[in-house]
Image (tube, rainbow, N blue to C red; front, side, top):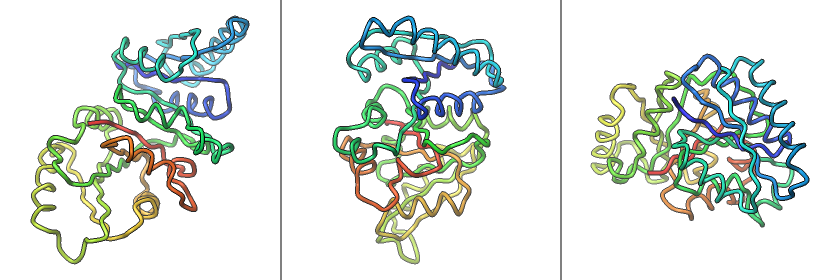
Length: 262
C-alpha cells in the first residue's frame, strides 16, 4: 500500500493539487491517501475538520478509492510536522501546490512547498496552479550525469515509473555539449542506461546556457507530463526556484515537478 500525503490549507492552490492527485490516483486501489491540515488556532479545529471531510467526500466522488484518511493537527511548524508524518507513515509521495499570486513575496520569505522539497524525507510533487491532470505518459528526468550510480534516487524514480507505465526521457543541459559527447558523459550515460534498462530510456543532451529555458522548451517539444529533478543540495533548490527568469520553472510551468533526493 502506497501512502500519498496531500497537505491542504484550503487555498485554491492546495485544493487544485488535491484534485489533481485524485485524478492521478484514480484506478490505483493500492494507494492510501492522507489529507493533512495543520492549524495554529484551536478555534479552527472543528471548521477545518469539516472542510477536510467535505474534501474527502469530493475526492471519493472523483474516483479515488475509499481509502482516504483525514489528519488534523495543531502545530506551528508545518515542515517539521509534515516531515514527521511522512516518516511515521513511510510515505511514498507528498503532493503540494505552489501559487504564483504571491510569487515575489514567496521568493523573499520562502514557500512552504519549496522548503518541503528541500527535505530529504520522501519525494515531493509540486503541482502548478494551472495544472489539470490529463494522464502521465512522458516523464523527463534531469541529470548532471556525474556519479549517476551513487547520486540517482533509483527506487523513488522506479516507483513513479511503475505507477504510470510512462516513457522515460533522460535529459542533460550543458553549454559545453557539441557534436559528440565526451568520454566522461558516455560512461555516465552507460551507467544510467543500466539503472533504468527496463524502461528503455531515451537520452537527450542539450547544449544551452540557460537550464530553465532549455527544460521548459524540451518539456513542450516532447509533451512531458512530469519533470523529475534531483536536488543535490539546498543551493540547487534555491537556484532552481528563485533564480530570476522571465518564466520561473516552479511557478509558471504547467508541468508538475517531482523533487526526489538521492
